[in-house]
Image (tube, rainbow, N blue to C red; front, side):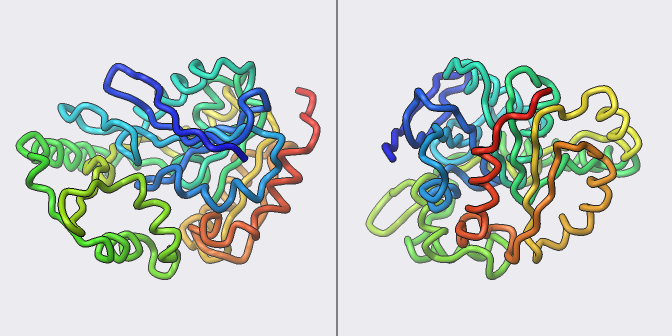
Length: 296
């Protein structure tokens, strides 16, 4: 498939896109996990049907995209607006959303906000965003504020530098041990480091990513949200068998969705298997993508 590197101008800079295929085909917006980038789909998309246009998004502060302004903490809902800007840029009538982990969480919430724009949802090792319980919310807010306060005095020259081999090792060790191969780490690294000298590199991502403030609500409140704003389009989740945190929450979300057009699948893998072992996902995804749209 033809690959294009695109930039969408936004008020705080630009959103970087890695697009695969023909822009005239039905569009699939691909949203990576937290700290990842469009490179996490490099091995999966070549195995998927070529009759779609895959729009892989580097979320703000990820990959080649600009960081959000540094004068405020990051919030989970901040990542919904960039999706809308991407959608308005390409001007398609409807889109399929495919998100891994964090990308799946914001994708599902976006589909509740703009159901008229979304024809299908694919969540890879992901679910509805997990709530911050009320008794933990104030601590979470304070933690976010303290980290942003430190960032205000941070200078880019203060960033540590690494050799290329150290970059790859650091990426592998920053994920769940054993889930990211050197090859997969290199595909991510292409979009998240800059060279500053002979075999010296710096990471370019937003350093606030690991202190994002999530909304506070109870599970009962989530159920009420879904009663008023249900997912009406065909949707599916693929879970990896070795992703413990998601498997523990799976029964809860099965009851939560309770929709005839929401399917769950499980593959024998780990949280980054869509990247390291994409062939495990190909049959399920191909069938879902090519399936005739359900009548709403």
